Length: 569
Picture 1 (cartoon, helix red, strand yellow):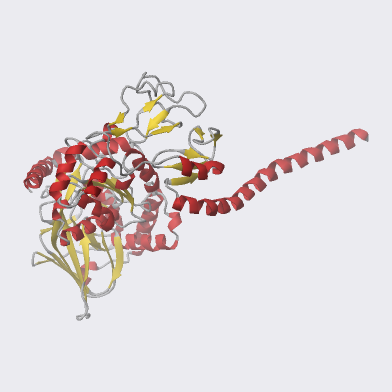
Picture 2: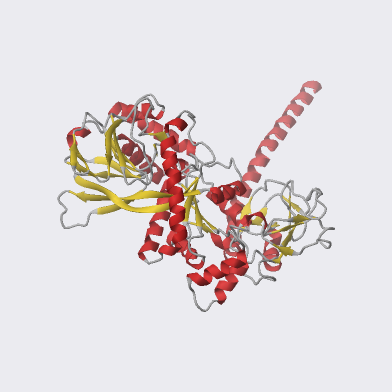
């Protein structure tokens, strides 16, 4: 009897401790979740008014030490400009006693100024500039890093460092030095010639790069990239487009030497179009000489424009931001056609037609329907669309649905197509796509198709549009996997479509809408100066290289002609 009582007591004890082991972490998690909003509210005011670019994290991704109390920390705040870290108790003191990157300061000599050191938390696998031994090997707050040139040095070697002047390091040719902005601020006469004279202080081949990142694009990597670029560059040349529109960010170009600026757009094709529209606005203001060259770091879902210019179908951190900057410097200048899409609704004679700018393509039919459904779903639940894979999966589901429903059938009976004023007889189609670039639908070479038929070459600067038809969503899928060719309707300088009846889905560069009877006219608008990256192949099929040799040669000719034109101006 006593044995059974003892066993029962042990079982209850085991059950009690099991319940405690399960409930205690749950209660701690709940308590932390309730405390976190209060903590964020308290820190939000400091982050807004502080002199550092503070960001809070619940867990640092490497061993980290507080720059104030030198204690190891798991959570706290870090500055994405200078790299200092602090726990919650030390954040206010850190903001008060530790200086951040100075975006504008006087230089000691013509081209150099003193190192700005930050102690501790040096990058992994960094080496001392004095003794060449590895830094940051001790489990404590130790060693120094310059926030400008990224030079690292041991505590003991700092006093014996042979050169205490900073040359901005490897990326001096893309950084806007603080002493340049100091000299610009002192100018009495703001004139392009004065900026060119000041550029001599920054060394030969100075090509400042502005970073414009959309934190809402695609896989939500924009926030991380902003921090990494602010660490390497001058924070004044890194812009978050969710806080400042590109029209205002690009005004920094007017304080830099004409023809020298390159803009790296971190986002999807829609973000690139937004920036190019802002550049067109600069032209209207008479700021043509300050127009920058535009390049892309693809963060969106489709990224067809990025793919066409050699920057790949999507960026997920596979190469470092340092390599991204090197690629930007090595890129070639090319011109790219931009088009005006005019939509005049039938019956609204006294209303101005809707005017849109087009860089990639215009379409009416199943692919526009997929984009419209995707857009409506994303507007309802934006948090769900935080991954490029999820976005493409949703597109696939809507495409599969349309294969069964066929909402866009008999398009040829509802629409008329004119190419350069000549009407085209349409076969039994469900969709028409008008392309300016080589890629469409997230990486498909639409005009090329299977590549088994001769077709006229395409270029982004030839002033021609390629017009194709598709039989439906299933035909689109076949084209994307190279199992079918599109219906090539022709090339033209001007495209005109007349929607006679019904309401059809349409899109321009991924921006969809439902349109009633109307007349659509697509004409040439202008040309944009883009950067083409030719170092790596953007298509998985190497056989396409031989088929596109002629366009590539034409593009290289265009690049050389563009460089000559820019240098002459």
